[in-house]
Length: 503
Image: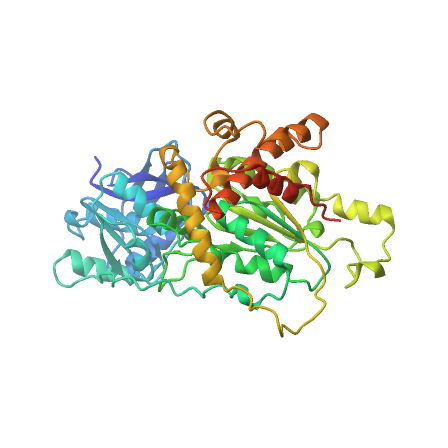
């Protein structure tokens, strides 16, 4: 007969599934069994838990201990079940009162001496617990701040197994989370630091206002990376639900700061060009872990020296750019991670990359092969393409001071508000989210306004996807100009952004 039940959470990507842990004592020779598709790390938990209980001053049952994890057909892994396993056995052995398990989700890894260690994915686990109707959570003290991000759960923190037993007997108190501090992330650098490059600065503003992808091409030292790093500062802070969504991904990755776990600013992720495909899109043995594109969800994915990336890395981005999520099939199942990011590419015009293009020594075929890593289908998904020129003067005497991030962000905010009102009935927030059929069918522009797009489609200079993206850019330009709808000039400017060559 089952003598005790406890609750924990299994993670599949950023989705949590409630796991019921049943403990039964007796019926055979002294032994500990874990059933319910445990992986190697979970199967080792019986040794960790037994040592933790013994070193906490308690005796492990000298009988057959059977621990069942349900749903039994669901693969389970990791060390986050340790605390639930230990308490279920102690309650079944009448060494702890059963009230400690009532409506309570238990998360944490046990050290051999009974200390409680934090685990990854606490936030999505708490969200899953709340959906399942559990009302209380006990987590490691280091994870309390993260767990407290979820409202509707009574969160307690413990440093060791003994603390929980003392609390369960009514002989002491567990820690409670402190009020969350503000996000301490460093503010992005200011746009006023960038010299010259008015065309690129304007493209950056358009990209921020509409959520568009951007390609910056030019010789080294012209400010491509500087501009890209200033894009997050032009974006609005994340809304509460968006912040929880982003934080959940970084929680699964183990990237959260313990003191201020909630991510409220759009993330900026810049992987090195030697990164692998699994590191970029997600992967790993068992169930796939999130990659750089998911960590950049609701933010910026910046690929510096884009033409140095292997072609298979770049082509792996295409599906995520269209669908806003990545699906990864591995041995233990298929997981889905959100990946709605803005892509920013920066590249030199050739492999030798001299400061002055007149000094290039690359053979024509070497130059073509270098730039061909950015394939046509990938570039078709990049809305704005900008050619940057070398800086010719360091002095700004007589010139107007460059606009600051705060000034440009104010214009971007107004444009985003206009777009959000337009798309509110559809649940979209930016022009880049609006699908082409909706733009063509319900927000049709006059024939003379789109004449240039029709000509480009007729001559084959523009694909259907490219035409849709031009319409999105045109709506963003209209929002920045506070115009009711795009004009022919806006469409022409949008087409010019896409037609500019990066060589």
